[in-house]
Structure formats: C-alpha cells, structure tokens
Image (cartoon, rainbow, N blue to C red; front, side):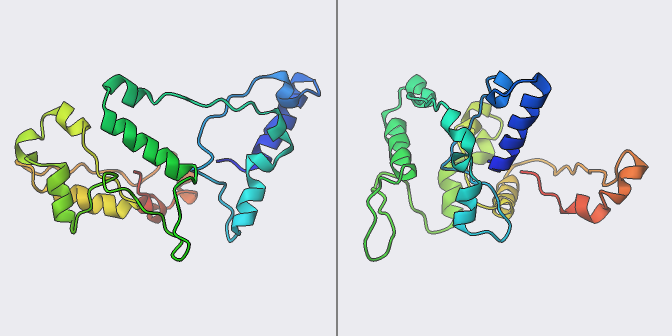
Length: 198
C-alpha cells in the first residue's frame, strides 16, 4: 500500500494540473486492494507508525467510497461447496473474528481447514501425486499450488519438484548487464544478481 503522503501529493498535483480546488482535481480515482493484507512500509517504524502512514489516517479518507465484493466468483462458478466453506473460513480469520485463546493468543483452525503434513516430501506427494505422468496436463497443474512465505523456500520446493520430471535439464542464461552504459553506475552487477523476482 502506498504511504498516505503519496496520495496526498497526487491530490495536490491533480488540483494544480486541473486548476481546481476539488479533491483529486475533480477526477474519480479508483483504488483497489485489501487493507488487511498490506500496510505501508516504514523502515525502523513501529506498528503505530505504519497505521499513521495508512490512507485511512489521511484527510482524503472521508472522501473514499468503499465498495466491497460480495460474491467469490471462483467459488460461485465452480459450485464447489468445500471451496466456499474454505473461503468463508479465510474471511473469518482475515476479519479478526476467529476465536482467540486467552492464554496463548493463538487461533484454532477447524479440522477441515487444511491437511497437516509432517514433511515437505509428504506435502509434495499430496499436492502433486503422479507428477511424472501428469506434468504435461495444464489443467491438472493449474489445480495445484504450494504456497510459502519466502521466495527461497519456493525455489527449494520448485527445484525438488523439477528434479522429479523426466527429460533433460535446460538452463536459460540471463545477461547481467544494462543496455545503456551510462546506467551501469546505477545498476551494478552485484545488484542485478541479487534480484530474485517471484
């Protein structure tokens, strides 16, 4: 999420460009996202600093009209009751309505919320059974995913699954130089090599 000052600067810029004192220069601005998922990043800041930098703390917030989606279209179109129940459970957790244990501060997940496994091997086998025979079936692959909080965990699991696939390994090399030589100072090779796009 952007810092509130970024939108306030946009507000002033649009007012100047359009020659009007109306908020956002009298234009409609569409913002999308979920405030529960992302807060502005404040280096070395506290949670209070993050909340203070949030758009909800801006003078612009009173002019925001919040529209919410009411129907989960993926669940609706597939007609899968268990997927609908899972989506409801996620919303309950996301809205902070899940019961919290008074002593531990943790929430309890229902038994049908997820399958708990003891190892990554069991996880891979349950999410990608028969990968050696189904790896070319795009529909089958699109129905499966393993999520992890960090890219290096994803890379490790991805490599392990790739090693199960038949065929020769192919490496695609990237070029760690910039097109414009003048930009080389801004983008040293070490920086380019450190990038890990997801």
